[in-house]
Image (cartoon, rainbow, N blue to C red):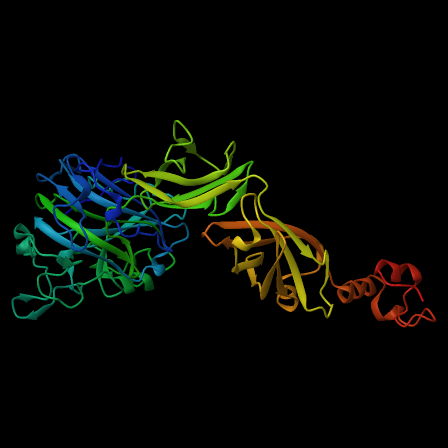
Amino acid sequence: MRSKKMMSLGILSILVSLVIPFTAFVAPTHASSLMSGAELSHSGAGASGWSPASAHEGAWAIRLVAPGKAAWNATSGMGEDVNEGRIIIRLDPGTTLGDIESISWWANTDYGYPPHVDILLDMDGDGAFDGGKKDLVTGESLSGRDDVLVAEFAYQPYRGPGYQYSSPGVPYGHYAPDWQSSYYYPTYDVWVRTFQNATAEMGTAQVNNETVLWLYSGLPGPYPGGFFGTLSDFKEGTVSVIGDADLAEVNASTAVLEIQIEVDNWIGPAKAYVDDVAINGEMLLSELLPPEIVVNEPEAVIYESGEIPVNISARDPFGVTSIWYNVKNSAGAWVYAANRTYTSPTTMSGFLNGDYRFYAWAENALELVGVNSEIRFSVLSGGVKVDLNPDTLNLRSRGRWITARITPPEGYKAEDIDIGTVRLEFSGEIVHADWGNVEGDVLMVKFRRSAVAQILSAGDEVEIKVRGSLENGAAFEGSDTIRVIDPWKSLHMLMKRNNGVSSIGQHKGNRFGLGKSHVNQLGGKDK
């Protein structure tokens, strides 16, 4: 009936000019726990690209086209003039057939045979598709070991082997051999789910464990020599070839490399729009979107003049090809005459005192550009100074407070600091200030010692950050280094090094059996 496709094909350029304001896009589609990337590809005169001509939701859907009609050349043993348009969803390494519970999409078929799905199997477990036992486009016999599971409109919800009818002469589902020339009577010009017709047919809204699939290395129909069964049957490893007892070498642990949704021209020309593609109920592709950009640094804080960190991350299911950045000052002028290319964390320097806005751009493989301009930061010489007291924190102390004396940057007064925003941070943990008071040019705030002790552990000196905001909304950050000790933990470790309880009582006049030098190591006094 049909044939398959190649693994590595070039990305088709977008079908229409994309002069669109990015503010129209809501939120980027995120990669799922199974999806590692996506690609739009085609074979021959086929096409695959985003189009605004029709969409189930939003403004865009993926347009798949396969013009003409393929022909089987019995002499060469392969198809000719095969055209395909497809969506490729690459899966994370280690994904198995057992991990796939459902695959679904919405389709609006203009003409021809509706879109179907191929599940590429890594039968030899080497992490790459070796071409399979039959060429994915032409159907030519190959020497590869890998294979493909195919789910199609025609076979839903057919159960085999043998033909079943809901009533005499009425096929159960879409399949009937003499219906092939009419493409099995699909619904045209209406958005339907996966393999549905205009009515909500049972078992056609998604590919799941009850969906009928066939193994591509066998015959492409429910005839002797073909492997047909439900996804659940294939996972259980119980699918045998029709007319014999040979089992398909497929089960739940079989590795899966890709999922491909496509149209082809084996029956005749086909054109369809595909939208809202999901795996295991998680939406993967639903709208034409630019890359999602996260600016990790700079942060929305006041920096002391000097080096300012730059750390940008971007992700897109179709891959990010480039990232660049620039900065505007408060007058709206660009700091850099030309945008700077970003490849890895770096720094910026030479900024004068003032307020700035950071811009980051990223482009994906579909040539869509996204922008993030949410980060505003300031540069002030002198910065914010923080002095924590005590310098050494005894975790066993019964003291009540940790005090931070905060000196604002030049040009600001202590009264300009919003006390309600001041917080102490260490290793992602936060303790908010209980109260504060202005003393001259310094804001003194206090943190509950017991709360601070819970987020610290004894060790070498640690850097603790103090963050907050000014009354005008500008954020600031300062830090100080303190020493954290736990005498009882140190005592326990020392006793352990001296064979623990075996040494207790060996030295008269010392309750714990420790010598003078041992006591001195703990910072105590020899009595």
